[in-house]
Length: 455
Ligand code: GDP
Ligand code: GDP
Image (cartoon, rainbow, N blue to C red; front, side):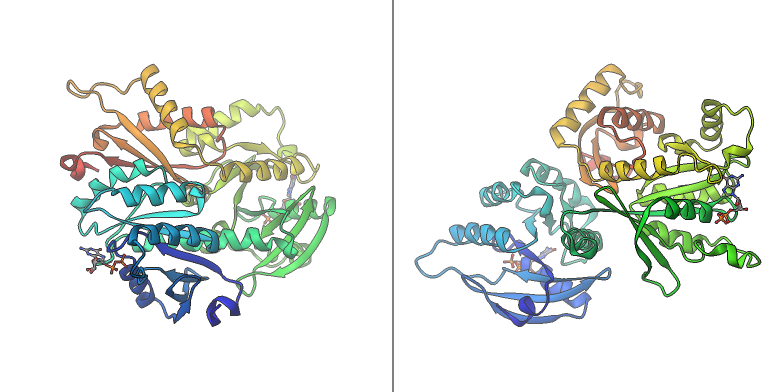
C-alpha cells in the first residue's frame, strides 16, 4: 500500500475503461485543475497512478488504471476485465470511461456488465464529445444499463465540472454514511434547515423541539464560525437542525433586531436534506418567502411549508388556505403544508417525522424500466396536443440523480413540449412513485442532431 492510500482513510475512486478512451488524459486533467500529491502505486497486478485530490471541499484518492500494459502472454482484453473487477472490489466508486466516437464496443458492454451490479457507485463517462453537436451520439450509451452518461471532452475541458461535482457529492454522502454521527454506521441522519422571515416562530419551533426531545449534541460548531448545529435523537434517527445560531437563547437578546439574510439562508439550505420554510399563517407568503422557495426548488431539496401561529386564526379552512397559497405561487403545489402552533405545541413532532420520511424518499431512484412504463401509460392516456400534424413525444427517460431528483427526458423535439404538459407529467409521476414533497428536475434532450438547436 502506498503512502497516500495508507495515510488517511479516504474514499477511493478508480478510473477504468478499455485502452485509448482517455483515462490517463482525464486523470491528468483533473490533477492539473487541483493541487494533488501523485505517486506511483504498486497495485496487486501492475503499477498504477494514485493521487490525493480535493474537489468541492471533498478529499479523495483518484486511481488511474490507464497505464496498465499486459504481460506478453496476457491478452489486453482479459486484463482490462480483471482490472475492472479489481477496481470494483477495491474502490468506493468507479469512473467508467467510454469513447463517443467509437460508440459502444464489445469490451465496453462486457465491462458495463461487471459494473451493473454496483450501478449506484458507477459514473459512466462518455469522452471525446469535443463539441455540442457530438453530444447527441451519447444517446446509445443509455443502453449499457448504467446511470445516464456524463458527456465530456477531456481535450476541450467540457462537462468535467458536473462530473467532479457529482463525484464530490458521492464522496460526501459516502463518508457521511460511513462515519454517521459518533461513528455509528447504523444510524440514519437527517439535516433540517428551518428558514423564514424574522418573527415567524423559528426559534420557538426549535425550543419546542428541544424541550420535547433528548438533546444529544449541543452547539456543535458548524462550518462557519457563528453557525451552530443542534442534533437530537429521534427513534433510530439523528436529526440535525442546521445553523440555529442565535435561535435557541434568543429570548435573552430580544432587543437585537434580526435581519433577514438570503445568503445565510441559502447556506443553511445547501447543508440540509430537508428544508422547513416557515411562514406566519396569518400573514401568508411574502416576496422573500417566494425567493427562498424558488431557491429550495432550484437546489432540488425536499421541502415542507410550515404555516405557524394557527392558534391566532379563528375559523380556519385548511383546504381553502392551501388553495390560496398555491394560487399565489404555483411552484409550491407539490410541497406539503403543515399547520403548526409553537405556542400550543401543535404538529411540531409531526413535521419532524414527515421530514425524515421525505428524506428517505428523496434518496429513492426510479428504475429506468418502471419510469418508461409509466411514461408510455401516461402519454397513452393523456397525449400531448398536436403540433401542426405531429404529436410531440417523450420517447425515453432516465433518472440521473436522487436528492436532487434529476431526470433526462429524450423527446422528439424538446422545444415543442409544453410547460403545462411537463407539469402534468410531473404531477402524475409524484402520484405514481410517491414523490410528494420531493423536487423533480427535468432536462429535455433531443434525440436527433437536427433538433439540437431547439434544446
Ligand atoms: P487511456 O488509454 O484510456 O488512458 O487513453 P489516453 O488518455 O492515453 O488517451 C488516448 C488518446 O485519446 C490520446 O491520443 C488522447 O489525446 C485522446 N483523447 C483523450 N481525451 C480526448 C478528448 O476529449 N477528445 C479527443 N478528441 N481526444 C482525446
Ligand atoms: P423567529 O424570529 O422566526 O425566530 O421567531 P420567534 O420564535 O422569536 O417568534 C416571534 C414571536 O412569535 C415571539 O413572540 C413568539 O412567542 C411568537 N410565536 C412563535 N410561535 C407562535 C405560535 O405558534 N403562536 C403564537 N401565538 N405566537 C407564536
